[in-house]
Amino acid sequence: MRMMLWVVRVLLCFGLTAGTVYPAHADRPLQLAVASDLRFAMQDMIRAYNDKYPNYRVQLIFGSSGKLTTQIQHGAPYDILFAADIAFPERLVSAGLAAGDPEPYALGRLVLWSRHLPVESLGIETLEQPRVRRIAIAQPQHAPYGMRAQQALEKLGLWDTLSHKIVYAENIAQAAQMAQSGAVDVAIIAQALARSSGMQHRNYYLLDEALHEPLVQGFVVTIRGNTHPQLNDFLKFIQSSDAAVIKQRYGFGLISTLEARND
Image (cartoon, rainbow, N blue to C red; front, side):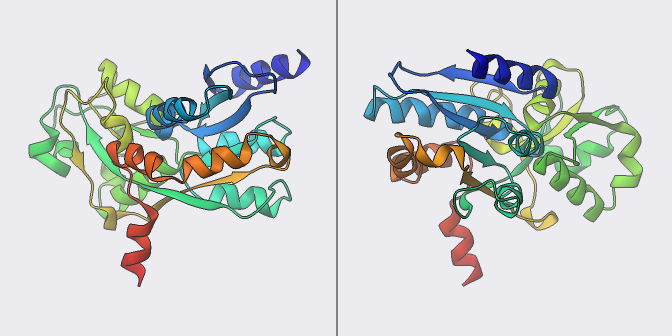
């Protein structure tokens, strides 16, 4: 009970959101700290995982990679961190809070998405339209997609010009929600969110990945998670071909693609 109250306090203080707890099991649930871009893909993967292992429980906690990492550093009871940038799992390794080395699991992509503008035809020019007054990105200080959005705008020579229009979201999911609600005119978000059921009714514009550092996403098992009875089965599934199909459905690139490019 104390542990659950601790988790609730963490979520409220740091703007994190809890996902579904999947089927009941005598052991405590496997607690996953998950970057917001993975919200829908991870939910689908956990459903597929529970089809295979129906007696296992998994709890998903969503937030920005930076804030989730900070929470683990302050004692949050998470078993695995799934970050949008493998640099954050590497921080846990450096701090002695990880049970092993980080593993890359996917490549993320950035897109422009708007509720009412034809971004798919206008492309980058969308951002310079006079009617565009507010542009949402995730906070670059702790959200990898926000950092890459800033890099892309700087490389395009637009950061200084557009900085007064930028609205910062706590994480990439919140940036998507701002665009979806019409609170902003356009958002630079994860392709994985643009492909979710709530947003796929609108087309999007895929940013050239050469505009920013690669979004190599990674996970790491924490010291706490290393003894969880589900761990081996879960890791085997999350790196399986079944999980890869789901990741590709949401627009994530496979790590093998990056490795092939670097050869």
